[in-house]
Image 1: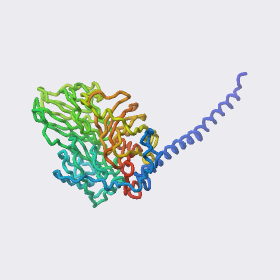
Image 2: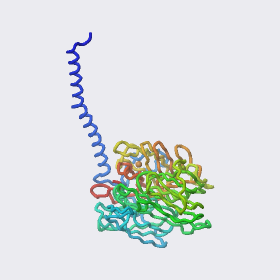
Image 3: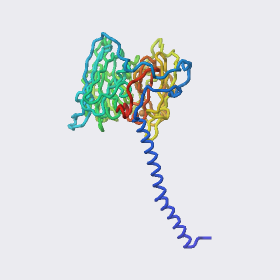
Image 4: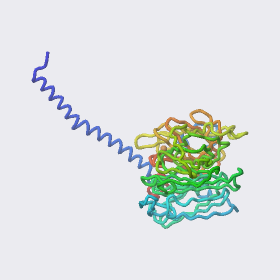
Length: 510
Ligand SMILES: [Cu+2]
């Protein structure tokens, strides 16, 4: 029976009531729930990021990260952190090597990049990036950090260099953040792997690095290159300073002199938080080193896009062509090209294959490392939700550490199951990349300290536990580290007198 006019009205009124109820009750409730969930996630995250007091050496057995049980587990009882060796006592060995002294003064100031603007920055020795430190392999490097007026305190981490535990510059793990007026002297032996490294604060790293507390650190080889023609070189450090991207502190780019036929070694440092992809126009090139480690027999590349993850360094070797000019550029830093040489503008190619180290270069003969069976295997899943970037579903400081013993061979499977890029950085060690997505590397061995992982990728890496200490393992998108993607690789029995937390003020990855 068709409803009469009244019936329609009643029906319409009921619907209006329903809509009203939805608008006045349903939506606010849903919103409240959403805001509540976000707030809970956010504050629980803050709690993890800013605990009252946390001993990063502390661990209990049975609470280890993604550990596959192996025969060595049997010998691990009694691994409490009491009665062990303190990180503080793990220092640089006695050495008669040449001493290189530096002073780095951290202060709040303003910098004037070449665009005429004045920008507030936190600087080392008045500039950001701070001075490029150049040392020779094997040198005894002595660097004194002075904190003039950074209220939260400062520390310096030597990114990529396997320094002794006490010199790693991690607030709350290897030292207290240096308070205003204070100082701290770092001493370490420059590695025998000459190459491109960098340094940055590891107190409130996501804040302090983006405010400018960073710089390049170049380790030069003792003996000059064997190849006939001398090689020119240039450092290109990209950083995010507040909202702008700078190249060696410039807003305009970099000009590198070079005559046709000359070889230029370009040291690209990504000190920002996002992956940068580089095009090289005008000449073929070689990737000669990654993270300071030379590749074996690197081949010539053309029309190849080189992705460099946050924290990573790539050294490119480029011969200046007869036409005179090479341009290296990245879409993420459009206004900051690098021009090598002078001459006609090379044609720009945006499309190209993405550089892959899976089969680049050639293997070493008699590669002993590949024969080694690991003593331990850890699995780390890099994931994320709205506010939390996690490892194995947990966030700093809730992620149990990986625990190893000196002398062990360690394999780690790193899977990126979350969205976005996560450059995986390990302190105190160099690791070797064994495989990507189940495919073993078949070119040059690849040794890194920072591994760019993209969503869906799985890598197997290998390292020797040869540097006892307490080592951070974190995403080098420092914003991600501050959102939880940060954990520890601890050597059994190593302790620390320092604490992370609001009580000490040491917040390494905030
Ligand atoms: Cu990340």
